[in-house]
Length: 230
Image (cartoon, rainbow, N blue to C red):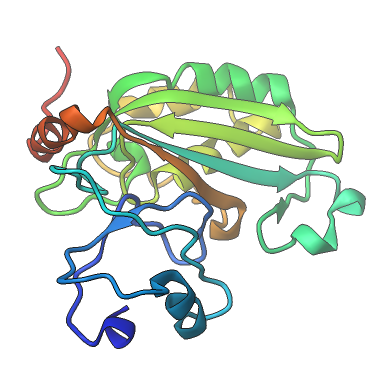
């Protein structure tokens, strides 16, 4: 972007995904002195082929791509039938070597919903809270034998979604009991027994924001570190 605009640009994104994770609904903002004509097309010519800016618009007052967000949505795709793994989806779908039970996955996922300290599932960062409100975590099996997890929360810690998925896959294949992932919420540091699911199965699909007149207030509130729920 700096190359196109010929000025230093500081970009703020809604979700800082791990290396290898995809995003189809990423949102970003930056402060510019002016937006040139044909800006989106010029960016397309400058960006690598796996990255595109789909829309450019002037942000309303108080908007912050990261701190104004009220919710992030992710999906995780895994195929547990190796014969059915579509070669054309190999970049966004994990092929799993053992059968997974959807009912077990959802039973375990339901116990994780709500506001908790997800320290057991996060890579802790200095000065950052690991308390999050997990609002949705539901698995469905698609007709093509792919299992899709729909995940939503007010925010996510580093590697949180992949760690949650890794723990649930252990339940889905019968290696761990349904109650095991939720029991880890009592931990105050990352749980060594949780495997992090492969990055390429995860995609950031959408970011939700409040009405324009609430953007600044939301950003201010989000910047304040949350403390444990009573």
